[in-house]
Image 1 (cartoon, helix red, strand yellow):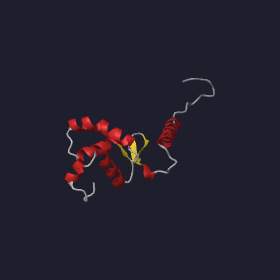
Image 2: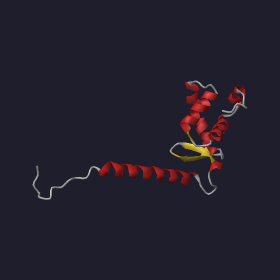
Image 3: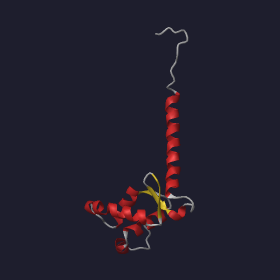
Image 4: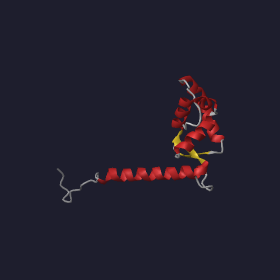
Length: 124
């Protein structure tokens, strides 16, 4: 996180506001797991604290209008995306890209797997 915020102030700042600052500074979406780990490090959480606050932060990020889920557990800032792009369309676009990547991978895997047929009908 930026140096303009003291460690004391960071620990006092709400987790959802730290999440906003993390994403703003990184400039690209982050997985929720990475967000929670970063917030936990800033706030000096123990494992028990993470277990206690993980659902709370997820709920706060979900209901806070500054954030948008862009698919597969990735969260970004809403102002990074066009106004007409809703969470559902962002997820659909991400899923479509993943689906196309999976299809390309399957095509590559099956290219060399074609069966050779003996036209004479005589086996081995």
